[in-house]
Image (cartoon, rainbow, N blue to C red; front, side, top):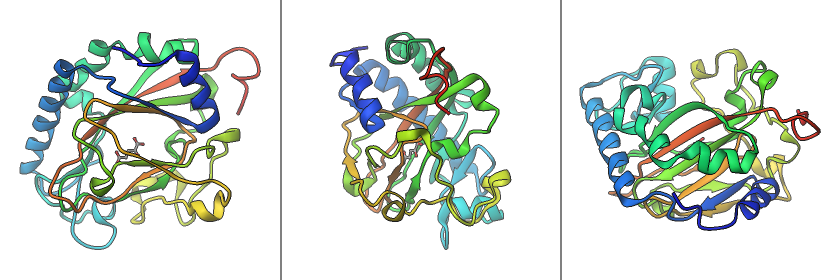
Length: 263
Ligand SMILES: O=C(O)CCC(=O)C(=O)O
């Protein structure tokens, strides 16, 4: 796996902006493995009518797939929004971190210590009904105990299809990670986030009036790496194309010294 640019430059960008694009990270042979993994997981959702904890189907009506899962409403078979713990369901996706050497080639060089593998997500953003992922910081989903051993996470998000503005590519708010401050969305029960019929959503213009969002289209096999406190979003997919992506999340062990004691 080629990073395409010096490690120091990526570290600086992660520190300054909270995210760093990694162009053409994944060789075609591994991308093919990822496509097969996505096809298999999405194919299995054709038999599903309801979301479960790990599998969230898109749905008609107010609040889309998130609200339907929270309230037990039916989703749309075959139109899955996200699959968490995707590595437990897909042998193909489970192989990818090793095939790419994600920890040795990326996480360890950037953080200085190897990461602990945390999770794999399939973000399927299906055609026509793929719903918006509102502005959020992933740190919202981490428990307080996490910080006893870890200082942050790296998410390595890889486009499987062409991710464009019209089919819901990611957008980031550069600088929103500074200070590692968690902005809590209003109206959310922190103890039971997934039971809330409204998906956590941050009002970025009120919280960060001086920061400007950046839209980040990605070719298949290109990636972006970002931190737990970096605010990001993706818009709805109303196009005819799927916008599948897979993310691999690593917990970053606390480092001795000031950086490790940041929070
Ligand atoms: O792929 C998406 O649409 C959302 C991804 C995301 O929010 C994440 O990886 O934390």
